[in-house]
Image 1: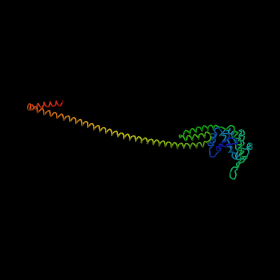
Image 2: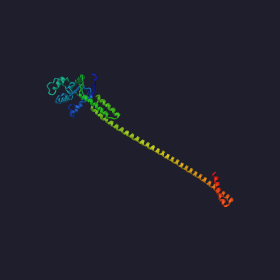
Image 3: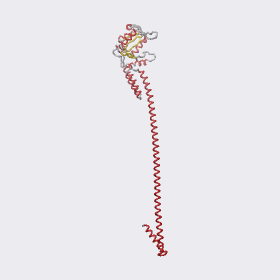
Image 4: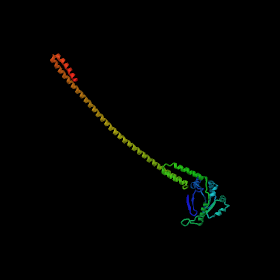
Length: 330
């Protein structure tokens, strides 16, 4: 598509190029689909369809092309068409007067009924440097062509335009739903806006979708890798922290165990010391008691002997022992 501003007419013209009807490199279905791209470039319709007849030669091939074009767009296409005989010196009035030629005259009658416009453009001559030579007749033909476009009141519309619009909506929504990253979603939105506004062709849009989808995939993989690396780093840090806490807990447990063992040892020693002291005290008491008993026995025996001889000594010992025991108990 090319846009041209005409200051004299005060109009911006947008010219949409299409493949030839009988393009040898495309199938008829492909050509038809490419022609339907009018709906992408001009969603509100086109003011004029320029049907170019190369070198002004209206033959059987041109006739078949026009039949195909009419089958694609319907008979009413001619009410919005301007037939341009290119690279010819024949004047429009001569063409309009043709009533006898085999291939052209039937179309002339159809175009008259549809009020189709006809323009002729002379062959562009070039100078020694192969630069186009400005020709007044050629320039006037172009002016007539632009004027014919401007006089078209209602744009040409077709069901295919609405289908193209609906397809654009579906395609743009699908393209957006497949993207995950913020940056490439924004890029896709810009691209979709250009398509919806007729500033980008369907073909170019698909190219951009491939570019954006690839960019989104790369960025998504990068983000996933970075996220995985962060997760592994956090996991390693957590593991290291847990190991550090475990070491600290083990050290604390060891210190506690040592302290407990030390307390237990000291308690055991204290208990042993206490038991030893108690034993010594008991032994001391027992020794003191034995000494008192022995003294009492001797004293009693001596007293008994003095009083009554041997028998008196036994009685005295018994009496003395008892007496001494009584004294000890006090």
